[in-house]
Length: 226
Image 1 (cartoon, rainbow, N blue to C red):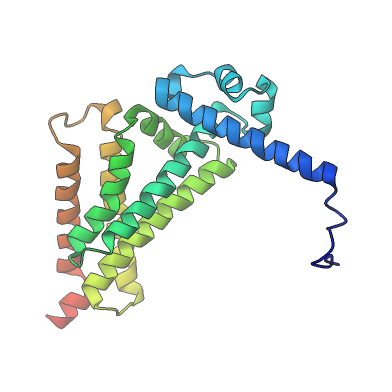
Image 2 (tube, rainbow, N blue to C red):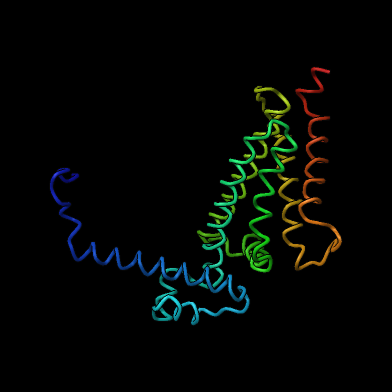
């Protein structure tokens, strides 16, 4: 039974409260240390011992909050991706044109990655090939799905002026996955060396324009009205 709102929770003793605050403080320090070191030196050059020293905790304490350095990377860059998606969604609402809207949404992720491209490549690798049971990998993949849904919503609105049927949604989701695939290949560019002469921002916009125009040209709603 829940405690009275004006009385202290009997299950939350002062000792337990201090312990929880201590755990939260350690988690924050480990997260901040990992983020700072990955930014300063790059993911591959940083060890968990250094993270522990920067966070002022024992080395074993790090593994109470993250099972591996890769998990710390996912934690850090999930936050980066979350922030970039939020920026992109806000920016996209200012553009009625579907190409401009989708471009604004996705360019925010590309811009965020430009600060530490090698770290983003490592993050992509963990999202693709990390352990299936990793909760932080699952959280990152959920963010990717959210981004794809946001893209699909803009495509549906452009194709149907508000109508939404199963076929249109399926095609919009496919187009959204194509947009994310284009983004992913550009994010991986620093490690693959593919198309070194292509300027990422311009190349991404060009591919988005091609995908959006193709979707609109074959959209069930538009072809039915033609």
